[in-house]
Length: 310
Ligand code: NAD
Image 1: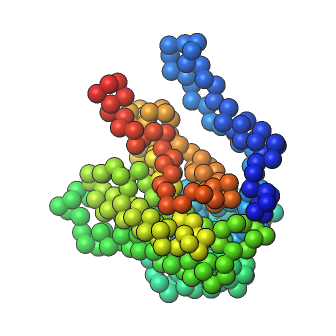
Image 2: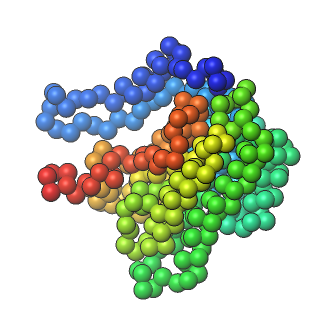
């Protein structure tokens, strides 16, 4: 499925993709009311058979869903966590239920020694790395004049420096090892989990927006530098996804209605939807995609304030 010769969709894969795309009925022609939001059901594809992936911050939320999506696509997965080992072990059990190998690794991604130890453990157990998903992230919010240096450093340390440390470790291995043609036509893939706030300013969250803006140009600059080695580096930039990080934006009906004003597609995103995007982006189906931010945001970056003409 993942050899260079098999990068074109088979008829069954094409049917599955179309089945996924066609789930939501388009009722616009038949009614003036807005159509009900329908979540897609998608047939998983074994796009990543034989590949070794590492997902940071994989014990919850988007990271957990990405780890599961990569395992469902056939990859063995390192589940990185910094706290809550039980949750990480539960994710590992779900990965193994797909028939993939899972390795649980505690590491603070903002700590260089931790990151080096985690990659060494991965090579010891799984041999190498083909896919890195830089997902670990956090928020520490404050009005700008009250933002402490500690809050600034913490968020930049995890969200930006953490992505740098992990990307550097992965690139070293990709360049050392080169292409494994039996699993992929590229020498390695890095997916940075950014945010719509890499382009949308965010009052009260200056450290977070600065970290994600930094991720955008870090990702593009690494991509430009390592593309000749057949290494692909991209971002996924989620909008509002239903996870613990933003619970206050969706856990009451009033909060949810307010949130929908920011989303042209009129529903919150689910973590599995980011997982599916990551599995595709890591696969040879996306082989010519390099240095881009893939917005998975229901149109949040489409200036929703202008929805009715401005
Ligand atoms: P989450 O809080 O469930 O996940 C974040 C994960 O990162 C947690 O498992 C946490 O333990 C881990 N983490 C924090 N500090 C770490 C460290 N130093 N080392 C290792 N791991 C660490 O929230 P989430 O929504 O799943 O967030 C995942 C990513 O998605 C983050 O980068 C976040 O900025 C991004 N994102 C989320 C949304 C959203 O709407 N949920 C939108 C845009 C971007």
